[in-house]
Image (spheres, one colour):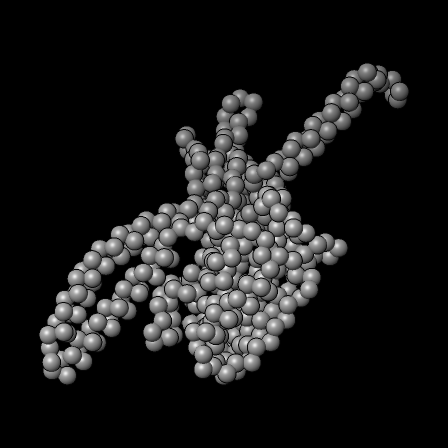
Length: 383
């Protein structure tokens, strides 16, 4: 005690205890805000920033320190629309709820947020600020767009199948009529023209047939198969199509490459197409390399197998390589453009991937990666 002053030690202790409690409460609520699984930005009644949690910084790509009390327009300078919405919300009686907004990202690839704005009231019930709660919906939006695209492609496939059937009927009638007419004409020039018509009819029929085959769903009957054995069968069949070729074939089948679950018929179809394309690209003369390589992870059994089909032909032009797996894309005069598209469809229904590497003048390499057996397949590597 000094100068006769009386100090209530109990009051001092209560005051200190209240201070500590308030500090712990503030720290607790700060941790809650920082740990929430949505972005949070709070603004006071003057439009100045109070809180920006970590997820908000990440989604809005806010770099550097943010000073409490800074105008919302300064903190959200890269997102002026969002800053305007927050500022306007201070004067609105019905705040935005479950709204969406496009915001800019650093890569300018577009980003969508879904947000709700809630009022912050003082003890008297008056609005003392607003809180923005938001999430990044970009992945959801892209997934929904993929779903819509898949639905459109499914409808397009059904329409294409119907059109193909409708086209085949008149084509068959034209074919029969032209054949009968050809038998009755003796003029050589007229027969030549009719032969050309018949050839084009045949080509259209093949295109329609291949299109129907591509649109038809695949249900592979998978069992454990050696990729080396399937390559040998495919090589023999592909070479039989072009008996006059002079191709040097090198086989590199890694002994540790395990069998993989695959449909024998479908996989041979894929390999025949890739090998035949390589032989055709080399003009029947060159070197073809067939390789089977296990894909392993450190200290684990092989988890997949790579099949590589490499030629030393002229390569694929860049503009064609980018869309080589699209239907009806071909550089061959008589090609349908379905072969590689069908190959990708077969590989994908085996849960694999197919890729191509090519440089003009340096050849082409197609890589097929097929996953190994799992417990779900009911098979094992040792089967």
